[in-house]
Image 1 (cartoon, rainbow, N blue to C red):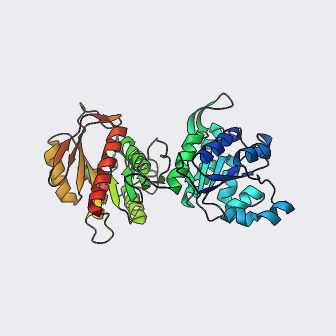
Image 2 (cartoon, rainbow, N blue to C red; image 1 turned 60 degrees about the horizontal axis):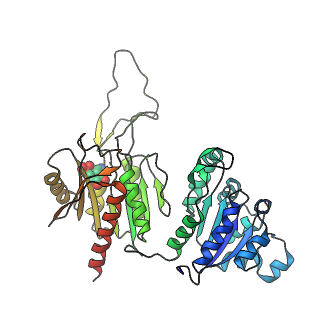
Image 3 (cartoon, rainbow, N blue to C red; image 1 turned 60 degrees about the vertical axis):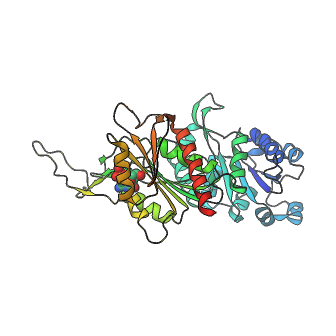
Length: 404
Ligand code: C5P
């Protein structure tokens, strides 16, 4: 396996117990043909030694910003420049905070501030530290700065705790690095925008209108598209699912936010709009919480939300050449899907039956019909992850056909 042949990776190892896994990560990256150079923070050196890292990389490891020999030899600015990718693993809460805040008080943080290379972080920390609003805020900042994130995974942690915070496995990190450095697969080089989940339409600052969408299908499609080599922007309404690895996820609340995020993410080669966008919003939503008054009911008036799929499909400029919509129907599924295809102006509709008997919303499987202007294809009941893979495969062959 030499998928990373000729690629140079700078691996910044932070001070967490997961640092021992970074030694295995070096091996995995080298197995794939990459050359690896390491920076260890002071914390990392409490867990592993620079010598262990050097023995595995075959190169000197770096630890000190003010090391005279290092500065004469390669220097922190060259360290920040002479690679194809920087991986931070484990990315501790402290290292993430420093990156988000632009601190530069040791070699690792200085190099991370000085670099313009793509950065992939593999967070690892105690579950409460991960869930702390400060860490989540830093994560949002880092994502907005274009930092790629792999993991963390859910699972047993060093302190006999359980939850999100475990560093992604070395093989997952190596695969994420590979996706960043050598896009391959049927959607390589394509930008795919996926919308997913429900939208929340405020009634007042504490109440909202929503629907039962879980986001499982849309998130699975985003993940499958990334695995097929695409650069994926996932625009997600409020869901409880983790952000898929290797995907840029933008979180939104309302339909209007979602449309704005989609517009910002354009241009794209493919748009897959799987979100269950609320059809209506409250026109007279309260700025303050609406007070309950005995005997009187609030008078909510509804207004129509923008139709994101139709808006983007009907654009004269910047329309993704392949637009895919979803149709959740409770009866006359195919007939309604065909009408929707025409009305929305998209190229394909993935239609499914969401009548209670089907149990699609929130469930793990889906029975869909793929409806185009000239064809209807019914797929067997499949796991949503398999529907996603099959759909992505199909889109790959359609975009391939469009090229020739
Ligand atoms: O009209 P309906 O909601 O059934 O259409 C479903 C399709 O249209 C889905 O692809 C959904 O993501 C998209 N849609 C949208 N914006 C809306 C309503 C639906 O993008 N406001």
